[in-house]
Every structure is written in C-alpha cells, then in structure tokens.
Length: 226
Image (cartoon, rainbow, N blue to C red; front, side):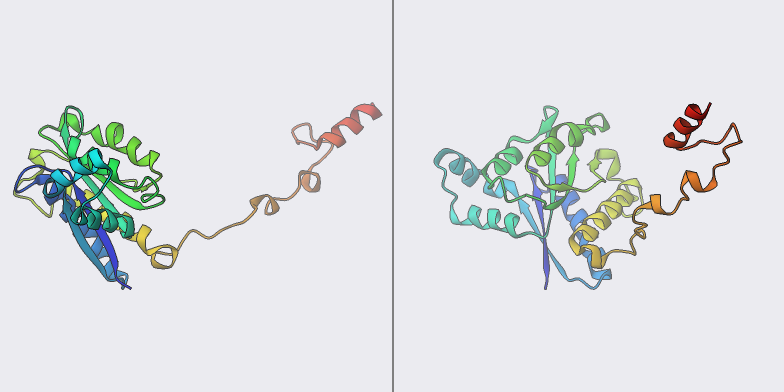
C-alpha cells in the first residue's frame, strides 16, 4: 500500500523557501522509504492558496470543499512535514490558523518533522520554542531532528552542505517512523531483567572480608551474635 507524506508550508512568497525546504525533506523521506521497499507519495500544501478559505473557516466553522480536502489529506497522512517562515519570533499567522482549523485529534501519534525558514540564523530557536509546544500539545510524534534554514544555507553547495545532511537525517527518521519496527534496522537485543544475570551477593560474599557487602539480614545476624 502506498503511503502519503504531506508537507504543510506556511510560506507566503512565490516561490516559497518554506515550500522548497518542505519538498526537499519530503523527497528525502520518500527516497528512504523506497530503499525499504515502501512506495510513498508526496503532497505539498501551500497554505497561501487556502488563505481565504482558512479565514472563512475560522469565522463560520465551515470548511469549503477545497480546504476540506487539504484537512482530510493531513488527517490521512502517514507522516507530516510542517514548515513555517519566522514572523515576529514565531510561526506565521496563516500557518497557525490552519493548525487551528484541524481536528485536534487528527495529529495524535502522527510522525512529523518540524522545520522553519528565516532571514537570520538568530531565529533558529523558533522551532523549539514556538512550533514544538504546539505539536506536542496535539500529541504528534515529533522527530528528533528539527530543521532551520537561513539565507546562507541556500548556497551553491545544495545537496552537499550541512542543510542537506540534516534533511537526509530528518527524512530517514520520518521514514523509519512510518515504516514501523518491521521496516527499520535490527533493534537492540532485549536483555530482559538484567538483575538475573548477576550473581546474588550471598553467593559470592566472604563474611570474613571487611570489604565485602553483605545482605542486610546477614549483617543483622552478625551484630546479634556479637
């Protein structure tokens, strides 16, 4: 069965760096899933195309058909990639408004990558301080690697620099989360209760050795004998 990865881009420009970053992250995850033998499709939702419908939904509580399709795509996605430009040290109003019209339960345990774009590397904490609390509240399963891209990241070394490396890492994490235990590398062997591996103290203790740690009951018996 084909899986669907949905990119939610809050960028306002045409073209949008947020949309570009989301697409590259999505393509990285799709490529990793293909290596696991899992087919995946990529859908990019440019929220600027839904701006009027999102506003009307907030005012009336009714989602027009086109917006309803986007909301349904998010609900049915195997994985999500959420990307917002930085506005006033937070996410864009359009991005937050779209999240507000979603069913609060639609992101429950949904694997997702958080990413942001900004005009300066000084805004790179926006992902952790503005975005992460929102999606943690909605109980999404947030991938460990978050992405922030500033203008200097969009250089001539596209596909080979630090940004590309983080995209590959985040894409791999999302792909593994989508694939589940059967699609990932061998897991660490479960050793069970390791307490059963070590010998009991009473089996190796020497009562005449002052440096030996003895069980409490035996220490108490020695005191009583004395």
